[in-house]
Image (cartoon, rainbow, N blue to C red; front, side):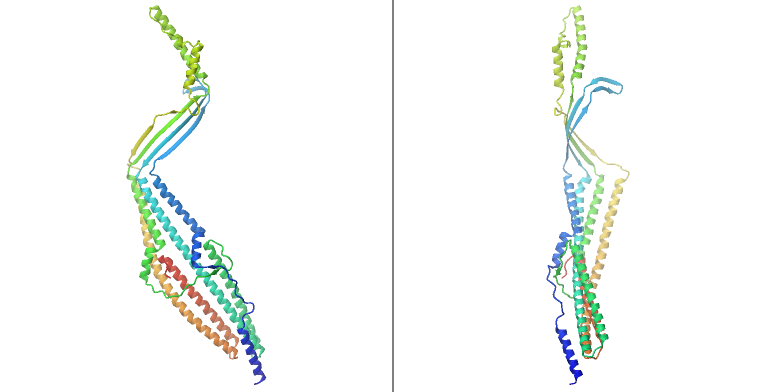
Length: 500
């Protein structure tokens, strides 16, 4: 064997050893926490801020139902008040009533009222229909959130697969660079082959960095949908199998028309709109109202001297009249009356008057004098209100008709989307199979190109082209497979149940 052949054999042996050796510095990443799709969905349902905001509407709707039921109970009220009137001359128009003392007043009241109308009778049914519509809308929103989480979960897995493919592409580029260096050392290669291999290796390294960044970014977006910060190094653990979708379009349409959350929410809205029509018609019914109440008050003078003086002034006139009447009766020989009780010059009479005024002045603030019970009942029947009732009824009818038309439109859209989704899933499944065949052929082409390059029958450009085609084929396989899984997830969201 010649010296040149020995050198070439030694170089090829060196290349084989380098190709078989593990890549320098390449180590498996440290294991991080795992996350399954079920865990991601459960976390999103619990922590997604938009989902929590939607659930708050249920609290409001339930409160509306309780309020509508409680509206059949009578309303009760209680009140108390305090007042003050300064002393002075009291006037009413042009009449003057003399000096009045300062007054302190207080009062209390208890009231009971009850009303019954057609609108009140319909309100519980309306509130329940609106609650059902709200709950159905939230179920639809939750189904949409689940689909978003599943789609993003698949996107993260896809990004991870593409990052792994970029690593494989980098490994192939490094192997080709080592082979080119080995051939150059034994004299069967050229510096151009080495430079071309280095360029391809550099491009592969850039691809690894970019794909890793894409994976990290998509993982952050998944955490945003879940409403939590995912720990660094989180690994997605759920696996998805590729299988042929064998359902019929009619079968899936029947499932969707029964279980689709958006369609059910539209139907619930139609029920609420119909209840509004019945409530608008109830405006023709009579209204019954009942009121009953108790109250008490106290009106107390702060200084009773003006009241005593008024009383004494009146008694002076009565004493003068009594004295004059006694003189007349004595002149004609008749018996006279006792006027001593009216003699205000007598201190005893003055003391009696003051005691009487004090006894008649109630104590402030709790010397209440209760008033008699008051009660009333009213029945009213609206006759004409400028056609306002008719306008409200027509508006309610139009809204109910619009809701029914929205249900029909949603059913038609759903049928179209389900059939389209099934076609997309079947196409994605077939595409994934074909892309796998393309990738297998591309891998065989690269193997043959490497063998030809190793034997010196081809240049490095042929190997580089084969590597590029294999990389494109591998990426196409990944894209096709995850397009299938995403199509299947979208189809599951349409039919409202799992198909896996």
